[in-house]
Each structure stands twice: as structure tokens, then as C-alpha cells.
Image (cartoon, rainbow, N blue to C red):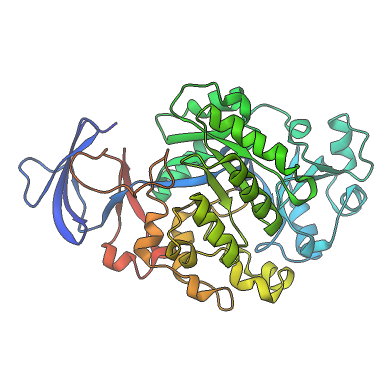
Length: 427
Ligand SMILES: [Zn+2]
């Protein structure tokens, strides 16, 4: 918490002013405040600290020590073999694999083409690990024979949780001062692990139903994580939602495909919406889906980064007729849906500035009319930690001293969001 600080010469909503922070709050904003300046902001914009509303902390921290195995860095079988066989020792952990690189690779493929180390490669979906024979032996696994393990993170986890410090340092460098941790398998052990960093980040922590009984204000939504291949019956899903709501806990439902979204909306309709209920991703949404989400008054938490990061794969895999329905933004806000954004790291790039740039400049052929203004893009990342559907936080007297200082004015930043550097964070 910032005890006392005078920041001189910063831009707040277009005016050059001084800002005093006192007791963790913004206490004064005016030109020429009395006192000795602690910092000269050199005219840079002072903004609320950014919040990543959808991130997987442990997986992102682990990915930082991993080899990329998919687009955009690795595009072909030759690239992949090269990436896997770089010198190294101990376990090799690959991430971001996509079948466009070398097809549905398996244990035999890795044995033939990978290094003589234990290898595990995660598919971009996050659900599938592909292991070589040494890795299977080391984990004492004899099945499945092809080394392709779905939804088996518990088997794979070998040595506790990864350290989060390097990741948090990187998030701070982006100006991220808070995150919503959304991993569906979060239990009490994970909750305690994340809370070790409560002074580094504003936290909201989603997870399993067993967290519902926690009274800690940082306990977040019940995360529902069903996919096309294992969709529950409508009644069962509605019951799960009702049970959370009865304990006054909102839900956040993973909805990437059309079927996932339709089933979830039907279940919410059946259970009734609780304020704060969230649809995660809403990757494909047609007009009927938008109208339904609006009627149910759910919050959408989207990833503006994916349309740019995955453009090549979408061009290949998604039917042309659906390109305009991918990762919509302007249609959502025009419909009055409460909207926030997160990176979905490690599956997306955690850099919020690249994501804001992608929200403002969408690739040709992918709903360019879904682009939003730089100001609206910024708001997606400045909603409160515990309320992705709320009003964006503001730099005004009385608000928490949760602020970031840019290397340039907002007028210069808004035309080149991807080029912004965050000089400091205060919180
Ligand atoms: Zn996610």
C-alpha cells in the first residue's frame, strides 16, 4: 500500500496535474500541489491499474519455463522437431500444440522425433497432454498406450505449484495490478497458494464448488467447465447453477463453441440469473445468442487478443460464415452487455496492451466492424476485481491508489496501444 507520495506532472483525463496518494487512496488531484515531488511523471498518462479478468496463474507461470510447440512460433513439423531437440536436461514441457503443426501426434511420434528426455506436450486447448515413453515410465503410467492423456492435470502435476514471482513481475511490467484466477480445478490448496501473493495483486479466485463455503472476499465464482464432448444434461447443469446461487455465489461458465453457449444459457434461464453470472469467452455468438445473453443479463468476459493471435488457424478451421461471429466486441457493447476482458494466459498472450491494440484494429475479414475505441478497450481491463460487470475504476479523489503511469500521454497511447510502456505501478 502506498503510504504517502506526490506524483508531479502527470496527465489525468487530458489535463496535466499533480496527484497525491495518502493512506492507500488518491487524496488530491490538482495543478501545482504543495510539497516535494517524489516522482516526475513527465506528462505521461496516469490510469487505473489494469485487471486481467481471466487468467490461469499456475499454468502461465509453468509455461514461462516451457517450449512453445504451436503457432505463431512453431508452424511446421520441422519447426517442432527443432524446438523439441534444443539442448536441455530434465523434463521437457511443451505448450500450445495445435494439430496444424504435425497432425495428431502421439507417444510413438515423440519417441521417434523428440529428444531422449521425458517429454510432455500440452495441446493448445489445455485439456490434452501428449507424453513420450520416458515420461509415461517416470509417472508410472501404462495407459493410454498412445500417450494422449485428456483432462489429467492431476496425474501430470509432479512437484507442487510453480513459483509465481517471475510471472507477477511480468504482469506488473504490463501495469496489471489485479487478476481473476479462473482455473476450474482450483481447490483449497490452490486458494492458499494464490493468497501468498495477496500483497502483489488484487485477487479474485474462482474454482470448484468446495470453495463455496469460504467467506474470504477474494473467493470468486463457481467455474463451470464443460465441453462439447462431455456436456452435462440441461437439468444437471441448472441444478449445479442453482446450488451455487443458493449460497449467493455467482457462476462463470466456459463457453467457446455454439453448443456450449446454448446449453449454458438454457441452464441459466432455468436456474435464474444471479447478479455477477459470467459467460467466459463467448468465442462464437450470433445475433440470437447476443439477444439471449442480454435478456439473461449475464456478463461476458472476452479475449480480444485471440482474433489476432489465432487469425491463421481461424482462417483454416472456422467456416467463413462464422468469421463475423468470432470474438465480437462492438455488437456486445451495443447490445448493452456488461463486458470485460482477460488474456486466458497461458493460452493467450498475457500482454493487455497487445490485446487492447487487437480490440481496436481487428484483422481483415474477421468482423472489422467489431472494433471498439481505445477508451472502451481500456475499460475492459479496468473493471473492479470482484465485479467484471461494474463501472470501470476512475482516477479521482477518494479512489484506491491503484494506478499506473505510462511513458506517454493518453493521446499518444490511444493511437499505438501496442507500443505503450508502463513506467511504474502504484498500489
Ligand atoms: Zn481459461
